[in-house]
Amino acid sequence: MKGPIRLLVVDDSAYNRRNIAEVFAGSTEVEVVGKAADGEEALRLASLLKPDVITLDLEMPRMDGFTFLRILMTKQPTPVIVVSSYSQKENVFKALELGALDFVAKPSAQIAPDATDLREQILEKVLLVRQLRASFAPPPPMSRRQVSGSFGPDGRPLAPDAPPRPAGYLAPKHVVAIASSTGGPSALLEIFAKIPPTSAAAVVVAQHMPDKFTRTFAERLDRRGSVRTAEAQDGDRVARLTGFVCPGRQCMEIVQNGVELRVVVTAPRPDDRYVPSADRLLKSVALAAGSKAVGVILTGMGDDGVEGARAIRDAGGLVVAESQETAVVYGMPGAAVRAGIPQKVLPLPQIAELIAQLPV
Image (tube, rainbow, N blue to C red; front, side):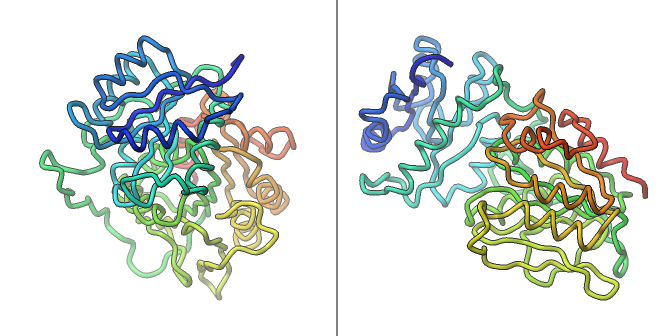
């Protein structure tokens, strides 16, 4: 990408449009090329201006953000950063499944001019488009039930399908530890959907995500397939067909407790460069599971997970990195590959198949 990043701002609030645009005032890296108040106007401007990235509010008149995303990703795939309030958690994940790249959470409907942290997040996410793979593509099409996230036509949640739970405690034959960041939610949904009810694996996840969203995301993973998934709590048992997502602003480790594996949720340490820390999670899984550990590094910025993956490989476990072919951002898997750590480098669908086919 040569020259400044071309940004289209979409929000039904003129106040928010102005405040988002002001984030980039004077910037030599980002140029706000247009502003739209609803999805219809946004589609017209996207076609006319060909922006490099779009910030998107989801609740708008005439055409909402979901309809806009469906049409945009079909006709003109473009990186989209959702800017949504904390109260719209389910809507955020629905947007990610429709093809949005990432999201920024705002505490209320209006973006305050002095919301420094929020403005920095918006700037960081927009600048991220320089690190995307050359040809941006949204996730593969999903069924209506998948996209709606198990919601009925009236918008009310459907009762989740409940796979049979194993009787008593069954120790996992494999502990799959996954590191992910930008692009990770959609990738994780694809992986969890393919794990069969006969699997003997447990899955633990360090996904870089704000703390108010990890529980909702875990519930979404839980509805997606056979793995009974929850936001981790200190002391949880790690058994077959259980999955745990590290809470935001916390770190998670897996420890051996007699014949059982348990979750330990702790505050971040001063040396944790990322929170949640994939390195801490993967290192703990290497220690607790040894050769039964499977480390997976998916799409994301930075290099979190590299040292943890090294620990899993040194313990005799398997390390898999997502290939550049499917990684939305190749930072994390690319860092592991450059360090020569993964035994396998695979596109996302093959990673999902590998986990699904782990020996029982």
